[in-house]
Length: 198
Image (cartoon, rainbow, N blue to C red; front, side):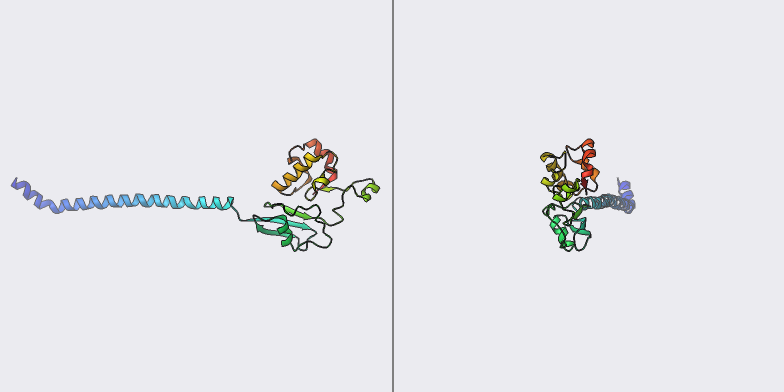
């Protein structure tokens, strides 16, 4: 028994050293694991932020052309309307005709707003077109529901569908985009495209 006590007294410093090393090693390992988890969390966080920024953009870009004082591309708030875009482009010229322009329509990114002048806004039922024996084209981006019904083959339902599409998806970029409107197929488009413009 005495020899065991003597042995323990002799090697107690060594035991204490081993014990301290074990405690320090465990503490370091736990601290390192926590640090790695924090780094992974921090690296993942910016991706979420970027995605949310993309989906909730505060601005949009629109192209304003036609009878406005300063035609061009403008950055506007995501809540802006056609009226705001025309105002940003310096307002309309004296020759402008806003008869077929829906100024309350919400804007969409990359859309184009075209303000026709009085000559362009002539309805196909005017006397000039009747005497010439040919009708003027109807602008898909500015025509009213009534004006759209002047196109042969377009009744009240299809005219309303065109207006709805224009309000939800933005301006037509080309006449062929009319096929995207519900109820208008390739045959209908082929038969009326000569009467249309954008």
